[in-house]
Length: 292
Image (tube, rainbow, N blue to C red):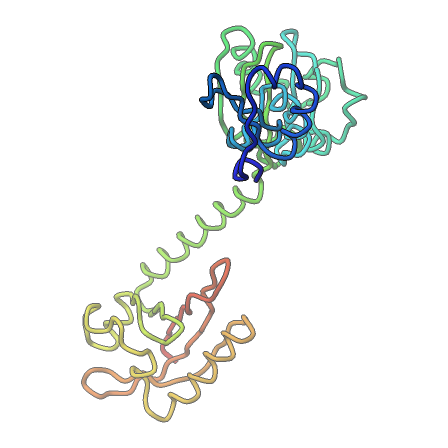
């Protein structure tokens, strides 16, 4: 960096007489201007000054960057004026409504998004225009039937911005989770289906009342025990191979086995094994037991 170099020194009088020459030299290394023999000012290049300023950019540069952000954002953004006509929209919004920006510019918003008519969202948009009121919420059927859209309304001087994000997959995931929770509750209520959650090393992390009742122990005693330790010795190798195949293929497995109780009795059971997988790795498996 130029500011780290040994600077040149010149008196103020010489600097004034030869400004053009000193300006060129300052592009290569700093020039210190002295006054009565003492350092008073430093002339450096514009690039060095910007680096000393921490690389900060002016308001003009910020404003020039905004269109790129608007074009690149993955959320759909529709800008409307105070008469609820479309002023502009970004490419993501154009894809969502399946119309080019040039085709809908200046048109009424309700004509472009028919799902808006009769929707409570329209009253929120009017409140954004009239009272500069913000809004965030999930709206069904706005862009197409049975789809959900996350909508954020932001007041702007021209009118407002309508930001759209398709969250249909998220809502479907929530519905699926609700079904799974209801299924788990139904299994627990049935009372004769044992269930265990195990780690990738077979350690039992959780077991329901039906399983602990079969074994004859409480939940605390069974936790962190290897699941294969609950099985008869002759069936442990088959269980280990089935579990390994589940982790390898990701496909569930069903095998016959023999559960050993605390008193030493053997109970014929059917084991259904399914992997628990997070977004990045396997978290273990769920095992469901029923009497054979």
